[in-house]
Each structure stands twice: as C-alpha cells, then as structure tokens.
Image 1: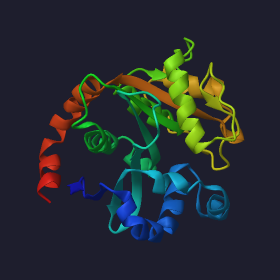
Image 2: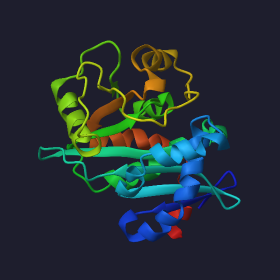
Image 3: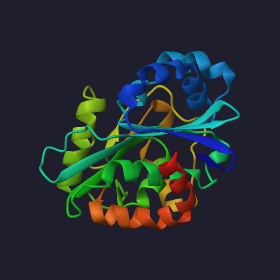
Image 4: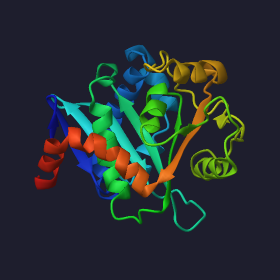
Length: 252
C-alpha cells in the first residue's frame, strides 16, 4: 500500500520473513542512526551498540520505503507474557522513522495497522497494556492516543502497571533494575538520541527532560492500560481517516 508516495510493507508474521529482515539490517542501522539525529560518522558506533533483537521479536512489522530506501519501521510484540488471564501486553518495538516523517500523519496510520493486527478478535472486556522501552517523546505521545501513559510525572504508577512493566523488562532487559516510581531503566542503551523528537505537548517533553539522562542511556518503560474495546474505539477514529488505504491493504 502507498501513503504520501511512501510504500508500506506489512509483515503479519515476521518469523516467516527472517531472511528478508536480515538483509535489511544495514538499512535499519542507517535509519536508526539518522532517526536519532546522528550522521554517517556515527554508523560504526551504532553498528556496535544498536539492539537489533526487537526487530526480530516483533510479531508484526510495518516497513516504510521511499524510492526503494528504508525510511521507517514499527513493530508490535504480542508474546510478552501478562501473567494473568484476560490481560494482554502489546509491546511496541523497533520504532524508527526519519525526522521528516514525524508530523506526516504516518505514525497514526502505523498505530492503526499494528493495533488492528494485535487486537481484532480479542474479547472486548479484556485488559490490554501497550508498552514500549524508549527515550522518545514521540512514541510516548503516540501511546497517549490509546490510553493514559505511565509514568506521568505526577502519580506513583499503579501496582498493576508496575507489574506489567516488570514483565517487559524481564524479556528485554532482565539484567537491569526497574525504578518503580518512575518506570525508568538507567543506562539501558548506548545508542541514545542526539536530538529528542519533541512533541507539541510541553508536559510530555518536560517529563523526559527532568527524569531521563538521555546521553547516559536512560529510558522509560512506558505503559498505557485500557480495555480491548477502549483501544479499538480510539483507534477507530484514526481508521476512518485512513479507511481508503486500509481497504487497499485488505484487497492487496
């Protein structure tokens, strides 16, 4: 499918496409470098330190190309155990987009595609937690369109939110302690943002600026909780905006 002259490739089962994804690793490293505000001189550092595993852990992945060049990725991992019946964890992973795409509406479209994959057919009353491990205010803002996100800089995260965050950490960063009050992992990455993708909401930007030491590799474990019905209801607003594109994808 196409969007604003970009080609979107949707992989419903990434485990069937490991060879194709492996061939894209050099392009992914270049994208991840530029998306974080660095240039070609930082590629060797990224090659040594960038965590490639989330690219392969995704249950579904959207790849964005322009003129044959990879300029965006976004995935969702549905295999993080929730530890309870009727509770689902949807972990957003490997979210990378070139800086010029941040305000294009494309991120909202990716949200629709990934949420549809992960939620359609699940019981409406089930609880669902969207999670991410990120330094990006943009990713946090994206999640806030689905449900209120923790940490919020005001309240102690509820016990269930902390429990879900620990489930995510157990899979992706089991060697690091989680700061429960701020849902922060200190020194989690060595491929930090040179320039954070700030958003229009000053409160979100301030949260990142006041709690995280970005050059030191600190990240939030973001958790946004709602019900399946609630998430699909919010996603529905975006689905209407992109209905013609989604029909194209369904008929492809």
